Length: 370
Image 1 (cartoon, rainbow, N blue to C red):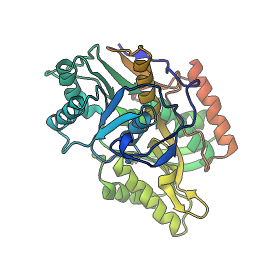
Image 2: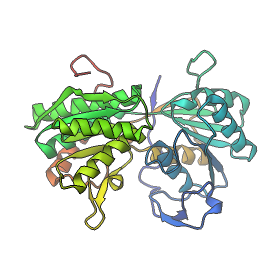
Image 3: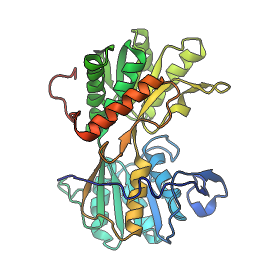
């Protein structure tokens, strides 16, 4: 059973610090950066094995790493040679052998590697994001030294859908997903529910056609994402929610190209993290094609689990969900392309989800397009 985890330090521990920048180890960088997290007073060594992509992917890898490097002074990430279980196991083993015994793994692809490692290294702690450790038969087995973390993507998608609908009022929307996995599907389903809610309750007239809901099939095909986005924009779509990792960057690239050439009527909704800066097409005015982003506070989740370990409260053996209820998902605190009315409306809807007045389905109940 999934248990909801009230974040350890959502308010009291947030502060500004001068920290090392994104390198393979905090001890190897002299770059200073500001952080919303307080550096914890601990000698705990925290490691991370990245998934496919780089540490500055503006998505899961970067989000997880930012919750680590800005939290402990002894941190290190390793990028595996490939994306097989053996590659991930090698990365985990290398970190363990270097005495990094609190290890974070971002993504479902680590499920088997963490399942093996939690038994092989009982004195280590493991955190897996968007997945759970599995045994040889594929069964979920969260060991006492591991925590599985999921996010309520449907709630984040719902809020982004409401925000975009209220902002645009009358428009055609689209959705580009990467692989058709549960987390990506939940973004889509929540997004469609948010649009429907706005149409029914907030006076908007937004449509989303079946042909404009596409799962591209990968998270690293920028050219493919750009091509799909171009086709949607040519069909009259004005806002595309791109929950597709690197493939989604292609959609952002297409929107930026059009904006640079004078068509500033098209937008993208970012995913996982605030992608506003990725959408900037005019540096002088800081104008961006990112309308808002459906965020999973990955960095906060990582920080909270490290803080729990430091405080002797590591919730080993549990499967935790970060949702609106515990402020684990949402849209960015700053949304330059949203009006005050849109932001206020989203805040009201957020409160209604939190109180239970609005319930967002985490599955397709048959009322959605797909």
